[in-house]
Length: 179
Length: 92
Length: 123
Image (cartoon, rainbow over all chains, first blue to last red):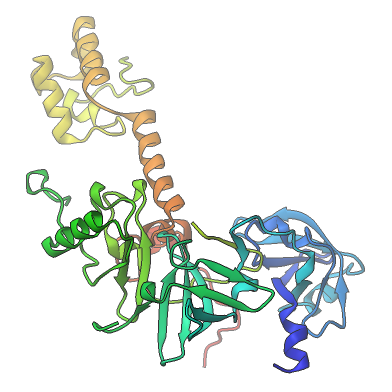
């Protein structure tokens, strides 16, 4: 992992500016946060390269799950339009601490997965929930993509500090009948 | 048109058998299945199924309010579902 | 003037037709109700005696779920799907067809009026 990667992984993308709204410099933001209004809840956000920082003030919520935001210093439509498609980042450590047995997706992504006997299984590719409980999607060391339910039984240990997740190998679901 | 009540809910019979075995063994192993068309029955509650979506198996922990749905509904066959920044996963 | 099941006041029409103005009662149920109340199908609403109106009203109250109650139940069912996060719920949430219809074209009932795509120009 290079230095820039390290830097990147410490931030999470909380939203993207989708366009200008009205003449006074309001912008529409599509939030990637669980609760749309939380885009501004974690303090100032910065652009992708970190060069600009914005203070957001949530004005309103549009019907399509977007929020209207006033950004300090952006006072006319031209300036607002200039921000279109800017990704908004927040340092990871500004997010409130997760509760026991709760993990931010951002923290879980990329962790290496090992079996209980120390055998390397792969890395966390994504975390999904399709209504049947949370699950980890694994970039399988054997190739392909495997999945595992994110339950105490199947994933007994999550060690974010050490960058690894310990799983019960027998619970891994691989495509193919033998799995 | 809804399914006639007298037929009862549709389930592939081998799934029933597998579920019973899993129940009896007490080990909460994931039951792999390709039967996306099967209805989720009350006796499946608490078991975990790996429902195939044509690509991989999606683990589905059956809870009470899923009863009556089909397994396929919990294992989407297309991928993009958006991304979220501060979303949390709960290890249940 | 006949008030049945809350606010519905259909009048000059034949009873089985008038009843279908109530949310949750279609032609089949309307005829069922007429039969249960012993009212001929040709009878028009304004020709009903007070006694008959009461009978119809009570039959509906007791045996059928209509109007507000029905709407609430349907909304609850949909909400259940949405909370569950299953495929059906997601489709409801996104306002797209739920039962596997195509969305490449059509599906306008669910998607609402067509919106122009910005920047798409004629060749």
